[in-house]
Length: 436
Image (cartoon, rainbow, N blue to C red; front, side, top):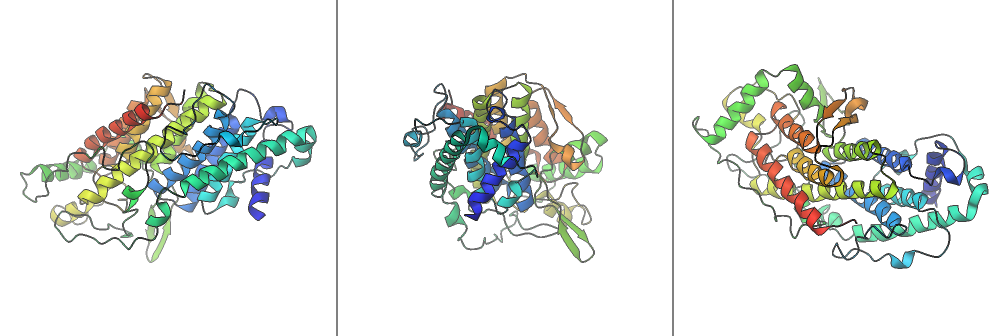
């Protein structure tokens, strides 16, 4: 009962910002869906979900919104029949009058709310208009919420079968003692994050290893080896970063595990995940082009699918190669006092996660919005960073990739091979999933 009241109140407060009539919910502008995405992102950041786990939340919440709206617009295809095991929702639609936009936002929140820890934080307003809203058309309001709830229940039942729960019960990750393998890094020496993520059920991939990249350079401390050349590149590049390079590294940091250390005091700074950054880009792009509800939902859902499959593909390789981070090698063989500009994330190095998922998202967004789509990215302004302008989604993905070298947390081969891996994931997704 408490959860139902919370979500009812959420919708009341959410719509309060846009007027006091049912007409405020309908119409061509999907601003409420954009607002819902931002609210969900804030909770994901607050709860400190890992990047792969965050992509899972975005996926199911956006699928719920998309499927609800697809019931109204027959020109858009349901995921049923395209994704193995996806639920058939034909029976959920009734002949009763429904506001599908309201139902979609409600389905989004009911789904996302069950996947985060702090559901109560989804409420972002203090103005209440329940009585006025219901007086306008109480029947439509109730019908819409019932449909949204039914869709959310169906999606949540489907999500429960993706092996996520089973991976929570796996035994603790055991580190390899071989030379060149990853070990936890300063300052927190945090345990391996999501070592079993490759076991999560993908959306379009046949298997987690479908787009297995070439292996990383062979580990060797020989100064003439390919590996040590890449290590020295990280070291030298980070010694002479320009202001622009520092800004690029900071803009794409997206490390939800950032740990502050002051003497004996340790505390976390909560930051956006890489997937959250691309969900933000998708929303900004859709909004700048005035996309309607269904178009916007399609952009969000395909982007979230690219992120989700991208993380599965990337994490499969991370825990296969278990490659050592630059910080560990540089401290051992070059400079024991060196620290990367960015804090090294708590998982193996190869391939670069940001490079993989950025490339995958860029492939999807380019397909949906165009190859020369110039945009301003305001994502990081909440974190004190300026707006950055990009000529295209591929331009943004390329910058996200190279930011990891500037930040000192990835070798160049991890970035370039990760970008290729992500491109393959994105193209495959588009070949398997059709929204129109």
